Length: 278
Image 1 (cartoon, helix red, strand yellow):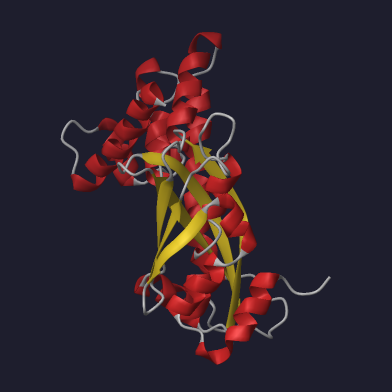
Image 2: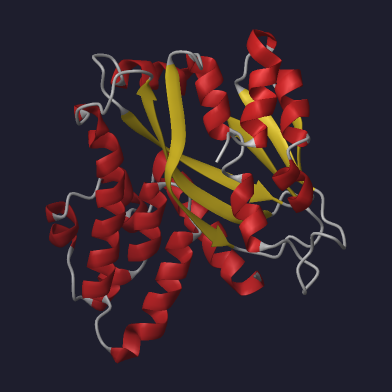
C-alpha cells in the first residue's frame, strides 16, 4: 500500500510548510472532511491549535449528536503534529501509543478542542530524550460545546523519539508518569477496600464515574476516596502507607485546605454535579 493522501499532501508542501498551509492541507484530508472536523487555527510558532466539530445531518448519529468515534478522533489529529513541528520533523517522530475517552454529554450542537504544545512540554521532551532515549508524554484533551460545557475528556500517551536511532533504551525519566498511574490505581484500590460489600456497590460505582470525569491523577484519587474514611474499613495510615501525596490527603481530610487541595476538591465537585446532568 502506498503512502496516505495526508502524507502525499504534506510531502508536496516540502520545506515551505507553514502552520497556515498545514491547516489547509489537513482540512482537505477526506477523513476529517467526512467527520466534520475542521482546524480553524494553528499558531505561527506551532504552540497552539483549535479544532471544531461542525455537526450537520450528514455527520450526526441517529440521535442527532456527534459520533463518539468522531469526538475521540478530534483528540488524535493535532497534538502530535504540533509536538513534532516544534521539535523538528527532521529530527523527531511521535505518535499516539494509547488512548481512552470519557463521554460526558452529547455533542448536539458541535464541539471544539484547544490543543497546546507548551514551551515547558518541549523542554521536558528534549531533556527526557537526551542520550537517545524515547519518552512518553501523557496529555489530556478536553472537548467542549459552544457554551463551554465539557462534552468529553480524552486521556492519551504520545510516544516521542529521535529519528534514525532504532529502538531506544528504556527511559528512567518516566517515573513521574508512572507515579500518576500508580496514584490512580492506589485510589481505586483503597476505595474498593473501603467500600466492600453489596450495600456499597452503588456508591462505589458513583465514585468510579466521578473519577473518570476528572482530569488530573490527584483529582481522580480524591474522587475515588471522597468520604471513604467515614466507613471505617480503611484508615488515614492506610492512605499514607499507599503513598498518597500530602495534597490529596489534605483535600480528603482538611477542614481548611490550601489552594491546591481546594482546586482538587473543585474538580471533583464539578465531576459529581455532571453525573446528575449527563
